[in-house]
Picture 1: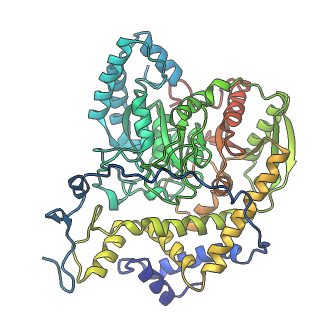
Picture 2 (picture 1 turned 180 degrees about the vertical axis):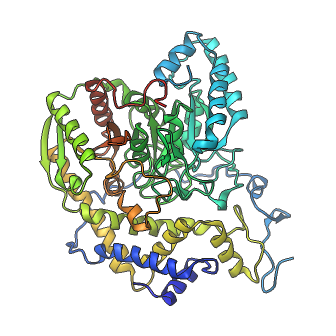
Length: 95
Length: 483
């Protein structure tokens, strides 16, 4: 099981707010999922090396390549100015 | 005309029986007409489709083109990036997101002359097995609109099964191509991890995600796979592979088909019977049935959810509202801005999986859950390696259920348990194909799954073709769309 306090701690790590949630249902749901995952925690598995773990993926050449255009990237931002993303002012409500 | 497979469509276009513009118009009209009921598409890409149709007609007039994909309308899951075309992942978070680059598969298919009809509905960020987590409302099953189309690539499967696209491209992290294919009576191929570039696929769990085709039959799936299985240096895990369709003979003489009893435990009788009948059919055609054991199946599902959610919690960390995506209006400081943006932008299932992933990665739980699940992953890989020394492919049900009622209100864990047969494949990175093999008491399609060793898509699709021929295609979606 997970307690509400533990859930709040996890939510803070995950940068999620629990404000809009039915906290009782969410705590119960996450508790059920963790209980379901407990099968793994309790599994008796020998400490084995992964077969084929030595396989490595080929790397591409370390060379300059064209990247995306700055204005294209900014097009999806809700707010931008002078070629920068704009975050809201911190410490008080945004304008 | 508008309800054919690839071969028939290509033949009609080349013979001039219909122009690609006329064909595309017919598909678009059908999509507009059926979409309010089926919700197969999040976006119908009319302008793109008609432009590509005109280009395809020009290429057909010039002659010399050999691709069967030229001029054939298709659907792309809405987590695959299309520059200039909204790509939402079925999430409020990306409701208005317009990518600035194309996914590798979209580049490849466009080069073949494929015509994009629309972006397929899906579970939000591909997290779900029923399509019910879509922010836009989930796709319905064309065979019975009170049922789900499956998930997470349910919109793609619904569109193909309803004859609104000739084929589709989905993604599969724990069964998201195979299960909706099974629910809708289609062939769905989850390729070997690395066979198809994931460049431009919006990530859920990067070590599990793979792109593949959903089609009306095995030959169509092979034709589409051949077009997309290319090495791409923009995805470092991509290796590509040789095409497979040229080697499909439909001969399964001498094929060793493995059957593991663990996949058949607690199955509904009609699914059990349909898959065992398919095994007998292979045997009658000269294949050899081999009993194998897979005792780690019981750990596969929780191990998968631990690892996939851990990766998801990391991958989805990028959504902060600053650079793209949903952005909250009310906040007092930057931390609250990010937390509110994420909580308002993500749906309940996505938040649950992020929370689980963060939990199993957090101090105090990392060893017990994440590390243990990684060890299980290694053990399962070893088991599969051993299994494929004894057989060429493994035959299982695709899912222990047929299409569920929409809004059936299963708990999260009950929903996860319907993925039991498909997740081991993603854990080991193997290829697998779902093939229609029967109907349940309600007339809903049953799918069987053929799992192969790495890069044996040729063997799997050939076995799928053999089964279609042995059964005269009677379990496939009918030529008129079957509706």
